Image (cartoon, rainbow, N blue to C red; front, side, top):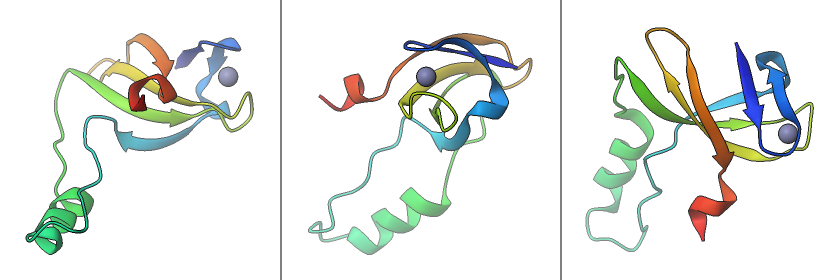
Length: 88
Ligand SMILES: [Zn+2]
């Protein structure tokens, strides 16, 4: 599998570290239901079959966090963009 890094170009997957689902966001610890929200954030994750957005870290390259869209059934990668663009 090869991931197209926006800075480095297409690179082998062994240069990257996988973090997980890019669609979840950390809950606010001040919420009244923070304990339940963190339980769900940490332990309850979807396992979809098909297109999925994942966070990958280019550890052996530019050290950027990427949001990679990948088909979990075929491992086909549809694209990658900088995760920092998502946060702003
Ligand atoms: Zn890179």
